[in-house]
Length: 187
Figure 1: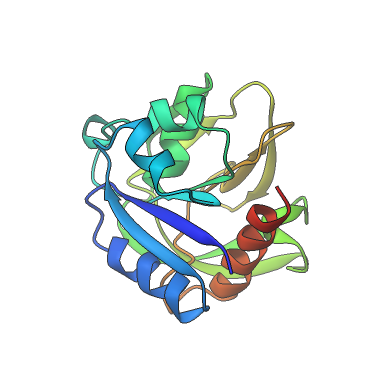
Figure 2 (figure 1 turned 45 degrees about the vertical axis):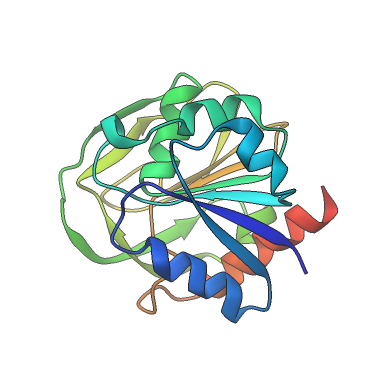
């Protein structure tokens, strides 16, 4: 069992991330995105998930978390965008806003996408999206509407996905979470 801290970025599915982790028999705690590094570390987590949310301006201390914490971190939607921006990437308004089904092309079946094969269908919002990959990151997946659907840091256990693995509309969402838990367990 691993212990995951879910950082609440005021997204509408944050509670679903918390529940998905618990349904997969792991420990989960929700914390505000204004929590201090000390408060997070005092919980002794094995990993961190940055939830989705409405805007980068409301992402609290998330950029500090991805820079300062020596833990595996998975950024979902807004969390993915915060990670990219913190490390020198760019975020823009997407051409296809709102939630919708998206077919993802897997480019690298590494770590969090292990065992996925060439394509999968996900549920995602592209109101905002990563438009330029940060230096020292590898693109893991793309779609016809977004070139950077998933990414990972070359040397740190940092991962981002534009889509929502916690919702039932996403195929293999639980597999992505299990793969992330395996990263946490082995880190």
